[in-house]
Image (tube, helix red, strand yellow):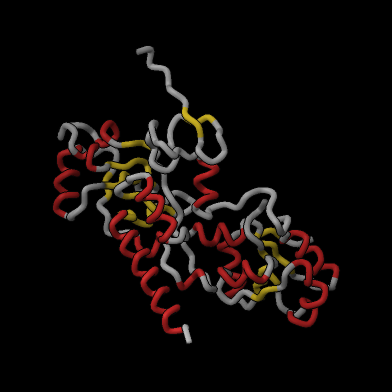
Length: 172
Length: 67
Length: 53
């Protein structure tokens, strides 16, 4: 669509026309802000915990487990120097042998989700699939934060309650 | 020939005064659009863009993705 | 056990997959393939789509 629009504008005499080929999806996948009715609703990136503990491949599980516990998390995301997600340690992985290197202990290449996914969708999926948490990343794989199911469900419920209040106030 | 750009160039050009245009239908624009973007759906670009855009300024068009 | 991967079906498109791409479980009762997950979460839109791209 945008290439056709760009060419059409040139045919009208516009001389400096650019085509942002990757489009709105690319913009939102990078976690950049948007305007509009959806922008006012909380999304995965808004509710994800940015303070989730992270670790690197060459650490040992024992010290990472202590760090996660001290931070009040039952998960830790494995990232490189660029904060690109390489793996995930959920509760089960964190309970393994303390001497294990992270590279051996982690779940490699975990499923990750974009910051712009509506929170109600994430809450529904996390609940339906019985998943405690999910890493939220930008389109280039960089960690935004860890979305915890409890936080997602709470945010979705709050949204629901606000919607119900609004409808009640609008009724004659 | 229109130049293809990435999102960093979008930000740079907008800072320099470029006009940003979403060419998707109005309902999609209403849900989410890039900050400051105008909406000229492709089907109405002939009718609306000539009056709605300043030909002296650069224009950046975008839609959903590259598909 | 011969170590072979047991394939399951995407609950939306019926494609064969080895695990659910949302929860990563090989025995997920409502498993989804990658394409169906990203479409369901609005990370992609079905092709071809109304406005023609």
